[in-house]
Image (cartoon, rainbow, N blue to C red; front, side, top):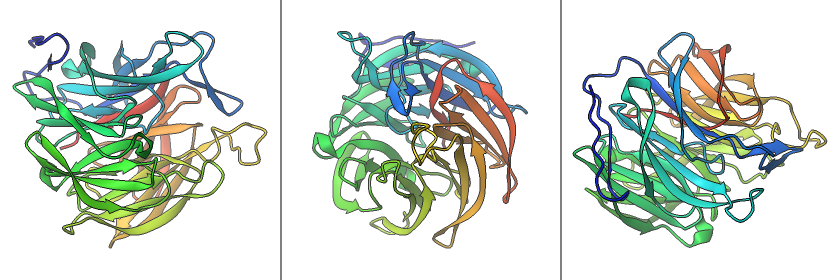
Length: 385
């Protein structure tokens, strides 16, 4: 039995709390129905599908779609516009872009954050809040008491306090000018600090966190051109960031960030191919998975075009990235989710509107299942503790 309570005219949202422990590992996928590829260009289709949020039982073999609910989201921005509460009771889903009210063939900046109650796997939209223009990557701290949203079209990070089952806006922090384009934020150091990727000016900012008070520290990191999706997991000894400045023409990179120092620093960078869109560490922090577009989102007439994208897995070995495995995937890959044991992965493919499941044994990747989705799967996340 669950209880939902709504507070405060849309500014304070009450979250659904589970009465008992979750019996499945839930993966939450945000699906964009208003953007497709036409000859290598992202366009609004003639008949857009509703954006939606889907819940997948990742512990099932093969993974099983449990349900979906309509909610706004966007493929524009890193594929981390979803955050799942540590107890899997709710998810937050951001929407960086929406259809223009004046022109149904165009998209414009959005700022919505949806609260989606998971209810053991059945999603339900319970509230909508506002962050900032271009609301993109979102994370919840390990204690489940704070959420941060990177506002990519505004140069800010929005802060939301979580207490007593309620989500409440707690201000914004300016990261840089609008052109800095903060894309994704991740917590580390027990939730006392965070990293923010800035793909507009090629920097990574460092945040200090004291309760709901968030401040920008003076130190900045330089990993590569256009640091975009950034992630950390497990013991949070390292973070990893995908640098996408090659523009689909020049080879892009992954960078490893040592978090153990008082000021984090980049310690290794490896070439991966064209556009590492999704980047995700395994739950134990030993591996890094990335979806490499590999020209699969280019025009078929382009010399860089390939029908398939790539899933790569890298080991974090003694402060270095060492390639462990690679497999072909569907086109225009987005987010990645790991199973808790680090042996299975879900990979989102916008082309074909599907999620592909893979098994990983430490050396090889093997596709095991394909899950059709209600629209293009654009971001995915599991609970992070």
